[in-house]
Image 1 (tube, helix red, strand yellow):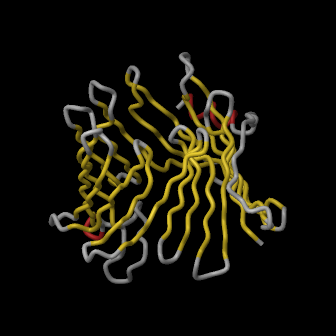
Image 2: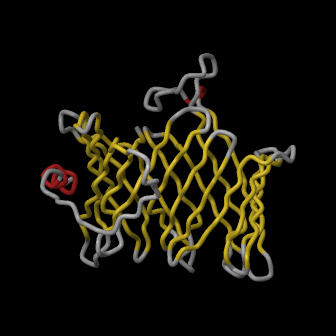
Length: 287
């Protein structure tokens, strides 16, 4: 409780760090800021994030029209993260609990489970299995289906009855080649029926193409890859959207979204601090 009390004091006192920004944008397009998230960190005695703060501002016509604050309290079990407790700060500055995420790891430091709960109910459970080469070979995700059975509307978890809440289970199987590169990902429902699979092609050790295929053999999505220096650039395309994403060391640093069926484009860019932590994320909308 003392930590939560101190957070209320810290919320307005922390400042923003700076870093490098990478934006996948066309020079001919006119972009305006729609939303900006600023991240700040309170560190523990060994330099790990004890609490992560997110300050969000939403914009219209260049002016801030809404602001919010959220934060996550981290707990550790030795060297490993064990719990994440998420909160938001209400308009009256009241701190409101959101979700609790619990992690477990094996002796090799690999995640073997991740459970998310909220309002006293399980929201999502993830389980992971590895082979003797420490490669992920199976994951199982149990996801809450909080839809009213009559109206189809979203249920409020804090008041929904257990009888009205269902869960969907998806099992994913991962296949690798002799060089330990992931070549196929297959997703199954709770009855063992294939929902879709993803096939990966490579040029040497570099990813070249990913194709997502449904049980009928239709291509749902294509992802192409291009490496430029240290940045991996991907283009993901479906029938309705094209998504451009840039990654640095496996972390997404920029994104651009084009919708095919409507005149709408969005992009985002991320800045990192000197420690490599996310410092700021900005969402832009094309005029």
